[in-house]
Amino acid sequence: MAKTKKQIILPLVAVITALISLLTPISAHAEGELYEPRLTAPDSSIPYYSRELNIYFQTGTPMPNCVAYAYGRIYEMNGEKPLFTHGSAGDWYGMNKANGYYDYGSEPKLGAVACWSRHVAIVEAINDDGSVTISESHWGGTYFDVRTYQDMTSHYGQTFYGYIYAYNEGLSKELEEKLLNADKDNSDYMTPALENNSVAYEVKNFGVTDGVKNTNNIDDIFLKKSN
Image 1 (cartoon, rainbow, N blue to C red):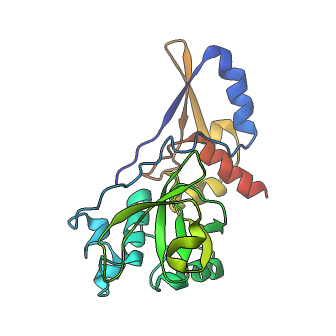
Image 2 (image 1 turned 60 degrees about the vertical axis):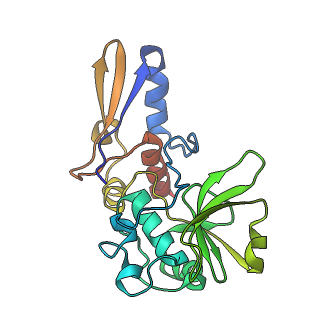
């Protein structure tokens, strides 16, 4: 999935504010602005869900299967291979925690993997009433479906472990490493340019053929670095 560099256009009156924001890490962004939910079944010809790229398919457990689907969905969302290489649904949360693959927690986030004792699914929407819409597949059962839950602990009576925040919001691991090793200097990681009485700040990609979709991703990385 090809990604390109992103330009953020700001009015001239907001230039000073923008420069200050570049020097002050922030983590808030419009949730859902960039996320593309999957609410329909993936075609079996899509590489992420087929033998071509899906490790679960390659090892004999294709969809319908919750881990095969979750693996493919992470791959589809991020455009890069998931860090999980094996394990059943009940293994993922503990495996992730032990290996430090992705951040995790109890708060639902878009693109997160919801984990139960015998099932995993992907968070596709967080609704105004606090309910969570998930996409999932079922071993030996339904190929794909979408469900909404007010209480995630009630899912099939299983123990709910929490969420794995596998969605990278357009920031690949390779680019993240580049950012972590860079100095937080405007001229180093942002390129200002005038465009029709506006200022465009173009995110540099440090030689990585991947880009970021949101400048706040960069601030998040530097905040992580400073901590």
